[in-house]
Image (cartoon, rainbow, N blue to C red; front, side, top):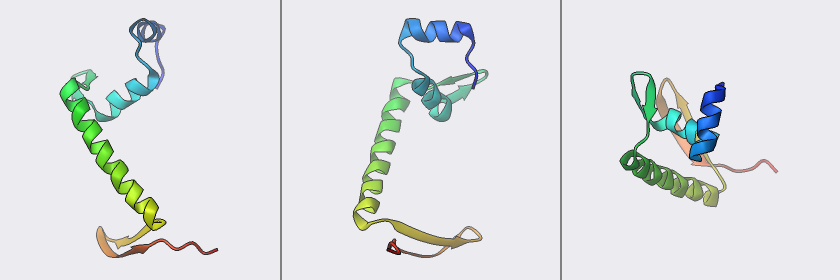
Length: 84
């Protein structure tokens, strides 16, 4: 997404980074022409991301995970085994 000169200037003045903007645009609540990620929703997002991190770490401990699906139905799942 392109940033206007005005937006870039305000980001610099207010200590707002591009990654913060990306997060608000991805997870914020859309209200007409703006996206809002307030403190309460940011805390919920942190909890959700921490849970995803825990799950990803469990997958990492297993060496990976494979899910076979078709037509929106899971057929089977198994631990990933490298071919080498």
